[in-house]
Length: 260
Image (cartoon, rainbow, N blue to C red):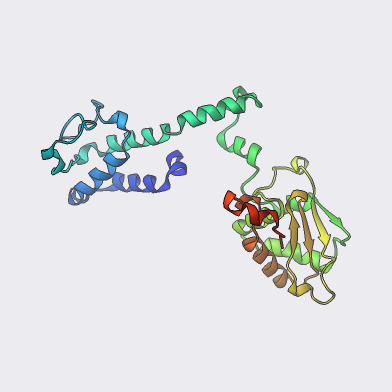
């Protein structure tokens, strides 16, 4: 699981090799062998626990004769190779994680982190992965908008129609993050639904909602139905850049971006 988060392609390949029969391995032994050797941690190449069935020192330059010979690894040792690859892949980032841990220790008592499970720590820092609409409603205030107005009710009904993935994109649209805090008291500010005052009368169904991510606010036009509201919200969430989409190549465009 941990390796999948680092390199999903390598993980799927290793899982495939684990499931191979001897006949399947032998059929493409050269391909599997080359894949293993390309991913194996160089420090493991001379490990006495790994028998390559060809030569013991794979770090030295190939001789002329060896250049024309492919290394074919035995099927019976494939699980040892896979274990060594997983160990090497996970250790590649150890130095970076160590520096991250030292920096984190400057602001948090990291000795206390062991009191939490990985999931509990993730929720504490990032919030729940599942968007709770009722929690969002509890954290909502209304500015120049009647909370019982039809278009506001259409808005909440539209959110109920969304999948979790669509809800995450909508939350990203209004606050530049894809998760909510775990409880109302942990919201840094209330979610604000505001009047879309700049929309011409009778043109609400043609307008798009506007957000201000720094203020966690949404200017909501007076849509005439839940279906139109849902369509406009999804279009805005799917097509509007936020800080989460920002990179240095968009720096100039981002400065003048008008979210809509």
